[in-house]
Figure (spheres, rainbow, N blue to C red):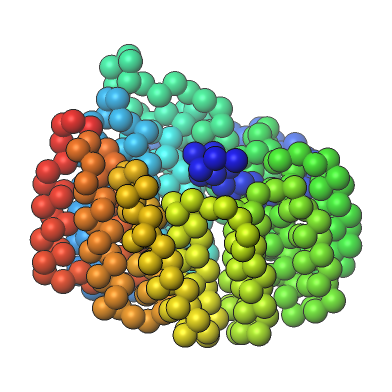
Length: 438
């Protein structure tokens, strides 16, 4: 498998990881969707809320505003996909630091189907945080976009720039809506929202349902997953692994069941690429860390690290994987080893930098900056972010420069690494120079 195939593969599996049994069918709703779901508002909700949200340092909101402004610099025609994806990344970052109003003010300015997905994600976030006042209004707004085939009323482009309606986009929005209803315990509305959606797009719904499985249904669910794994299909294996990861978290304190789940994971991933196995292992490590089980987290990390040995990686693939594992190791308490691993990955990057195409260098370096944050070395992290900003500014075309600027700024905001005056000035300068050629 070549390096160009890897991001696509991981993106597909990321969408399916949370799925449980894709053979399980949603039962038809008791009434047509238009009757079962709440009525859609005539306009997108305004970004105000009567629920309290935590205050953040002004520099964080200012940088997210700059990131969204940079993403919005993309011309709609023909760059609506790049523009909307970068704008959606800012929405995700705003939610990660619990700023739903800022997220919504950004989401309503996205011009394609991602607006609906973003609004549905904000609804989920608010429900998860217990802020229920506007959740159904947000869900109804997202539903309106889904009903329009994922095309927003603002998406007015020349004929050669219009994104044609594709059902998967609508299904993805509806799945996110349904997952929120499951979170709220409103399963009838979840079934109505998701009825008829393609199984490949229903990962968020199955994720929520997997998190709520009771002990009495554990064996039954495992039997269904066995059947799913037995099909051997790519999507089925991804769905099963995602469900196992959720079950691992759900039953973490049940040592016997947890061990059984791990055994099933090793069977399910046998024919999948190492990158996929490592991503699953990282999820398990996260669970162990959240459970304050340092011993188990380090055991899982050692296993993930062993997967890297003896494989002929390119520097472009190797460095981000090692950086992510170093960050997890630091979170698990083994800071000294984490630092040594991060330093070794950085040395590998420096040694192989010239072999990496310049549009990919920031993507490779950014996880190292994040690793040093996890290690607790904010001075080193700030230096690495500055390098990442510069690496992302090398290409003469604005598209990769914009993508990297948005991604790096969002990473700094989420990890609470305030840039110094010089770096803030450089970020603003790069933003000001975005323009033709794209």
